[in-house]
Image 1 (cartoon, each protein chain N blue to C red):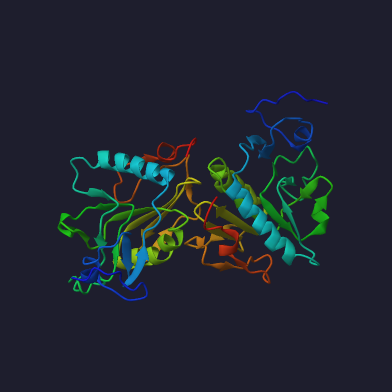
Image 2: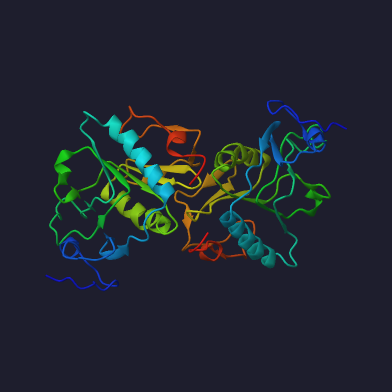
Length: 199
Length: 199
């Protein structure tokens, strides 16, 4: 079993990923290593926690399940390339909702979650809006929310009939109420997840 | 001359606005008062100053002029309704670029700037993305940038031939280089205006 630090410029797969024993968490996107650093801010965690409660409370007794980070999501390139060595994208979304229980195993999720939420920070916004945006679209994640926690806006992307994301022209703001396409019965008042004062 | 505090629920015009002597700065959008509070964050100001330097240096010896806040921009409903009593929208954008010198007088700008940049904060994001978005579009501000300074993303909106804003699907991020449509010769490397460390 290899435990030495891998070369950050190399290309890896999930079977490499599970062999690593690092102090830092990483993600693997198209074979490339992305470090998860530094730890998220208090505001990031507050928004994440409030969303988890809103969604989790709604999902009691529902087939869909919500998982907060840290939870490995393996995104195979196709439904036929699901072996550990064939999987080159493993991400840890801030929140994900999975409605197909067959995708969940003891190591996390294998396949596209139905809904992913990423809460941006200065260190992750490029990855979230470029690399992850592209792999979520390609993997077929039907709904992708991108949250700016500090300035309190939400971008919503939905896959169209051609498998490409479409978004609204303007971000949603704290006076809006949002219903995810994945869970139409749920309504989230953004002012409840965005604290106006303090961090 | 009236100096008492105006009723916040009332409807006002620019001739009212100039008589007010309020401790807080305000904006007037479609006759409605919006308070400018609290003062912007250090990061907000740092991004603003970086942009002032970048754009200001580029505009030396050019026809267009750059004005940072506070600078009153009066947006008349039409080219025929330019009297003080007819103007019901007076805003102070974080930054604006004006290429028609006839629009500038000693009180500020009368008419639509060519390019407006708003840098969001938790207290202004709703106003910037709702009320101001709408009046800038209606007034014919050709280019509107919306910056999330904390998470370091930029949304760019350009008026199309029908006078409506169109934007890119994904926000720009700190690895991008942006050239404003207003000043095609200028290129702004976003990593220069977004400090990765510190506030």
